[in-house]
Length: 393
Ligand code: NAI
Image (cartoon, rainbow, N blue to C red; front, side, top):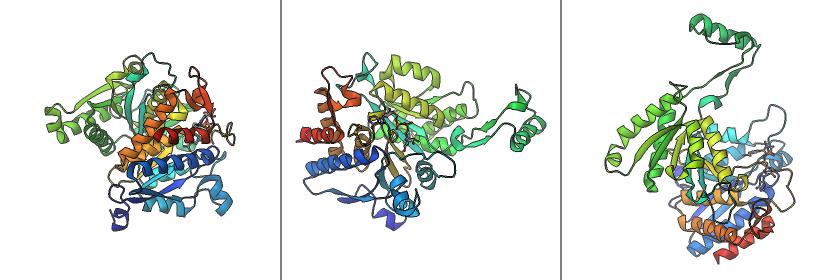
């Protein structure tokens, strides 16, 4: 890494520059609350010795109004320069031609891990009988798989050419309706698998978690999903033999559909999950729904080699409730707590999560959660932020 980046690396300095994208819709409400709560937690944890220097990076509607461009190059440069940043949700404009910021950041910074921790907070309504047993961290591969976007639409010359290649040169005979098929290609590589599984294993070891489960569909897709499983096991044997022998690490695997069932029946069997892109998409949403849903699920996109990490609210701009001071800031706040942990500022992170749980136990939350709590009291976005800060004091 170049020197300019090193000096911004999160672990060392006491004052860290954090580029933030406010976001569209409810982003304008939850980001200010998030910043206030995080500053409060940092001040409380470190008595003024550490602080965050929030620097706004424009994107979305705000950027369009100011510059005529939804994703100015300057914003990309800020995220290139400073390794740790955070973003609110952005509207995906209808119609083509607009580059998504998420995709741009992911590709430019090669953020190969989509990290989604899933835990239950006491007081939050859950469809499970024993939600306290849910405590998992999903490492979803972020750069490969069917998401690589290699597709050809039915009826196009490209689809016809691809079909000719499959049938003529590759000897494929099993396509049921060849003339009316669209085609997609699913690349899954050794390098892509190894860096993802390595990151998951290191996370498990660092946090003294029992092990990593490789979730795949290798019974059907033997070389892509099956490859993921085999390369994952091989990497663990090669690079983490000592930890495995000492009993600090257990690697296991499970077929994706069985995993989705098991997470409902025996969630306590799983801690760190490593999985491919598409499986990870389904899994993250199901697990989030098990512990309170979209308003409370945090996330990050990370490259553990370069150190670049972008933390984000996982929900969208919620246009139906925007501007009403009812949006739940918890997803963004918990993402900010993940960011603090990533920087090694664990004490400040714990203040936020503990205060949030205290509020939930008392039945105080934004409307999306409070309405399902016995004796729940609905607070506005701003008031919920105040409540969390009060609980810290
Ligand atoms: P959405 O996540 O914005 O909303 C889905 C439902 O969840 C709505 O009923 C909404 O009110 C509720 N909800 C979402 N966040 C909430 C919060 N913090 N507190 C309380 N309730 C909340 O998804 P939708 O409606 O499909 O998308 C709206 C816009 O957001 C679209 O333009 C979409 O492209 C964009 N989007 C952006 C994302 C991002 O920037 N990462 C992710 C998902 C969607």
